[in-house]
Length: 333
Length: 297
Image 1 (cartoon, helix red, strand yellow):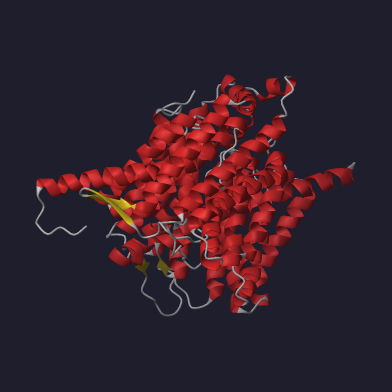
Image 2 (cartoon, chains in turn purple, cyan; image 1 turned 180 degrees about the horizontal axis):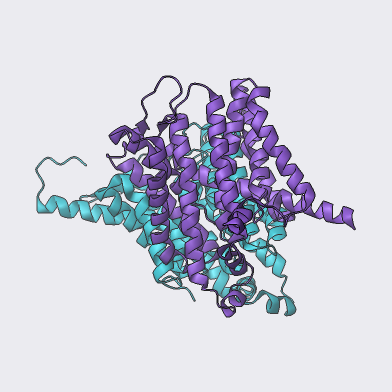
């Protein structure tokens, strides 16, 4: 038991500056809503935490697993719809809707992973994209999910800890911070678990991993299944935060791309990467995008995104964390 | 279609024939779109996510020339093809050859970045408004052959696609340049030792790919609306087409294009909201069950 807790909460294998940096980061987030009082600033922080959460989940398949999955939005959608529909239909408390959402997303991922992992590389990436788009079209087509109109949650007054609906963004801030920490410590445990090492071994060299007795196929399927489940967690939050969801809001292709991009920009396969990526892209999107949108200059923010993406792909596939690590190594020498 | 009498067998038959003709015509355009993707993949094993954005650019060129210069959209075909060629070469020189040696993830994100860049460049220049080509000899005209009536623009487009296809086929299988291209595609290292400028061949593949898809875009603009985000859909259709035909196969792309056109038209008639899902499902089933496609090696 002690060993298990240590695996979750300890960062002994990381250098000291990383541990100190992480503590500072937690501290800033803890007091953030009391420093920044504007509603917009708080919304930026919440969206940052949400995408850091998504990124941490996607990092499992995209970073540690080395498989480019461009369909994470479908899992977000499963989580969001599970929560929204269960609350609207049966008035189930929010906390009881998280698990069904994650189970549905994981089950779908498991079923689809079985044929999908016969594919590799580009074929796999396109297949994930296609599956996510089929789900989105189905959710628009079906009546019982509200179709293109989406699902609206009834607004409750005051702070409601059963349905997790609040008037003040401060509550949402700590709520998503809690979910983020949950996922973060899960990831910290995962990367040091047996499965975590197996996943990384398969990424680095499939044949070598197989020769050491790792079941490559099974490792990939399990990894993809867990990734699916983790994607749904953020989706559940989106349902009670935005109080209105439709397929265009929770399952679009752009969401899949943005999730993958935060991880790639920050640094895939590192536990800090998704956080760094979200810390750069989300404020860029919210401030620059809003400022340019006000001046009727649509698209410039995405062009900047795209240029960052191309430079990262051409120069530093390990992302910004790769650059930081290299600089620090050089200083030590 | 306006039917004066109730569903008779004859009406049903007419509908089916009409759909098949329409599907084949659309399929030829899909085939021309897929040709460039297949060629680029065959030569250097990279998937171009920005393919549909090249198409979108061709569509905007047709739109601009017909709206502002009052040129018939048919005249925009060579302009679009030339612009596509230049864009293809530029993409290769500036971006692609830098990411070719990198890991697969970097390649994927590189072309994805290119896609986003072109899409939002168009968004910035043209705004998200839906636009369409309104005038031209072919726009809005229909041809009637007995009881089958089809858009004249679709018939001419399909014919031009066929000609473009034949020209590319001839270039690749009958000329020295084409032989060098094929040699690069089979073994680029060996081709380099034989004195073939493989980087030039890669650039050429991108140029031809860009030119054919932009040409297809200018044809498509005759009867399809243009928005900055139109590209992704056609990229995915092209992926499905190329997967079905076999990555790198030219004849495969042609036949698969027609099959995809038929699937889209027929499924669109049955469940119109899900017609693209059927195409995505085709991609999924083909790559899982028969990864070589119909004609791949």
